[in-house]
Image (cartoon, rainbow, N blue to C red; front, side, top):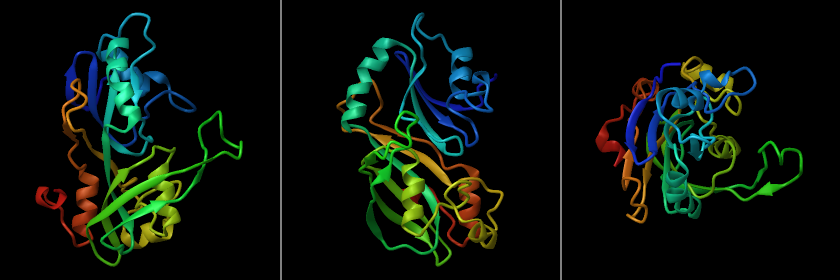
Length: 233
């Protein structure tokens, strides 16, 4: 499979890629591994022999676009994984949600575990997401979200719980509101936009950004709040 992603960083066994929406991270039900990001990286880069990589630091849902960090060697993984797990890397997402929201806030809603080995166990995980509004009107709002925890489908489930589902969400969204907004075919408007740290992780650049995809820009412009670089800060 040809790798149809933009490469933002490639050094010392670490890759940072801008994953398009619709591309699965791994093979699974209905997806051959050769058609996934994992398989594409193995075909396009040399992975350390005996290493079951690429090993991803964090994962994006298939319909989510944006930044993905992958380690191709054991040394690269051991260099960045501790800092990643400790929260040294700040992860920011951009989303368009239904309805008008306030200036900023925190969603702190515990979520039932959805990881395969915990699903149905009754395990409840604390989950926190800080957000601020960038632009919007009464029908939709562009928000910047900063994850404080990393639960499965956290932002999608949190915004549904808040009464402002993410536009185009096929699982947690609102089909009637998507229809009214004219976004039934736009896909999930959730983008892993920015990774940054304070210089404590020398193996990664202190700031990485994935440009907003065209589908987000088009829906924002059509909704009456066109987005430019100055809006994102």
